[in-house]
Length: 350
Image 1 (tube, rainbow, N blue to C red):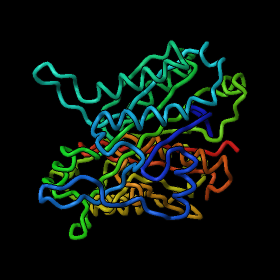
Image 2 (cartoon, rainbow, N blue to C red):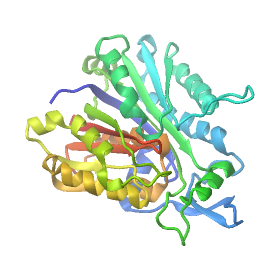
Image 3 (cartoon, rainbow, N blue to C red):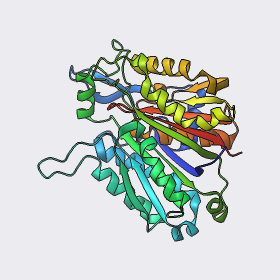
Image 4 (cartoon, one colour):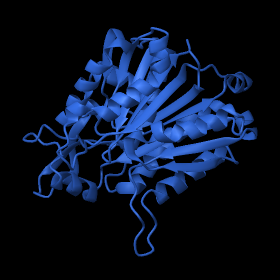
């Protein structure tokens, strides 16, 4: 199969680990990161969520997301070495769905973008910044343009990443008002969480020039918009968006009669997303094969937001690098609250 890009390094910081390797190995043990956070819901009850306990408990919102992102980015860029500074690079930063700025205030995400871009420029001085603020499915919508730039040699390195945190009183209040905040009495819910992850993509000859061996390849991707959202009653079983995205990402896979044995999703415990998944699997059963392994990290480390797909790619890369991945073909999924659905097909390069 063709390769759109090669993954040469990755980094992550989550509620389970301060590095990608820590997160990946602890996820394999099945340990959850849920606990009582020093935040309360609108009823004054402690919030059960997955959060990084090593960060300042008074650090919230964008400041906290920026801290997570800076740490994950530093890990992802560390293996590149000094020669990388001579290469042209782009930072594609994925964030939550943005709102328009009001009363002259900075738009949401501006602080994260500024700090992450500054961190990236420490190693890659000429790196440009592009924002994709469409939530968890952002990479599937924003990557095609950047992958074309990579293929045409407009850029040599593409740093894809995302950051998210629910560790914020306003975020907790909003989830509670929507009936989506996980509690012992509300299991059909989104588990509040936080994470940041970054992967460095390039062409094969650039990887050789840097002396790095890619563990994973991006083969294809697909995107679509679904009618089902948390704020409406559209049936999740129609699953038209995620089915269209999966089919677009796996056209070549199906043509070559290959099958994906590993799925990485952004599911928490919201039933509408599980129902959507079940419907999609039924309609696309021909592209699935043994060992039929499904990983849903958010069920143990909390809602991943815009960090979902970068983390999924990073986990697949780590799995192939370390030799514990269940299959040589993996499919990543994510869904945004505004209806976007995305799928990315990954192949082992080992």
